[in-house]
Image 1 (tube, one colour):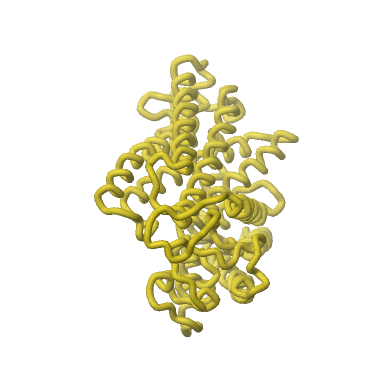
Image 2 (cartoon, one colour):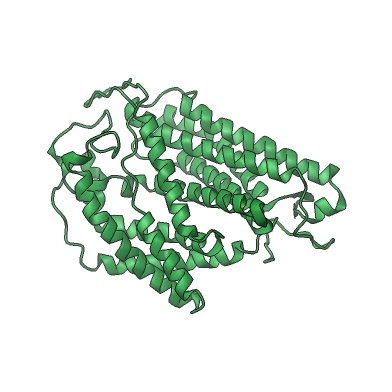
Length: 401
């Protein structure tokens, strides 16, 4: 197993990869549930801000998010303490040591995430009291919160990954799907974090959309293709991401809500969901095909093929779909189109393409700006992102504790 500087793997007793404490499995399930709740709370919170505005700290989405952090902290903390002080020698040898304590690698990452999330809570409340409403998702307390969420989701994925790498037979089949779901949560979090730049279909013909997408999403598809043990691992990850995103959108739009803060430019009666999710299934299928065909040709060559394939497939899927999502045919609850924040003054710009999300707040610009060399930059970014994903995936294949 690849050595890590932090946490430090214990070398005093030989590790038995096939042996793990019995308590690891239920804690893995608890962390996966908590990671799911975090994504539900996060997407609900964004919809809440778009529909209701800034509310009290104890708004329902916040309660869900921080309750999930508490679940992670308690379950992983209990597992670490139990293994350290009440586990057998074999139990302790099968875990990762950090500061003299023993626990699964994913549990250590998740505990850090829970601490970051709980630390961000009073920071975020103070920030709003001092500076007022959120203008953008990006703010210092939100970055601390997002880092904590990312750590918990990655920790859940690492715990599911270790279970997949250890399992066999029917147990292995369930573990493979569990890992694919956890990887899908990571992808959903990455998509949510880039929402302002990739979320609206109005942006799907601008170079910034393709460049930001190419810098972020191939990383997740590449490590999923390399580490997943399903027949089509990247495709399964992207499919689970898309299904989760759609289900959340379909449910949230049915929840009654009204704006509570001025200015109210667009009176809403229900929560405003995120738009139709970015189409990552198409490049994911191509990633699986390319990886299965050329995985023995060297990672640099493979990453270049994946980069070209991602941009080509993503362009082929997103460009025509964006036109459909701006058309009257998509203005229904299934495709989640034409649903806007309560602060937005509605106009014909809703059905035009933008260069940036600032078109919501400033004079919108219609038409498509020539993107020229932008696609070449996107290919290079996608190749670099794929290379990082393959490298991380190579290490992840060895994780068993």
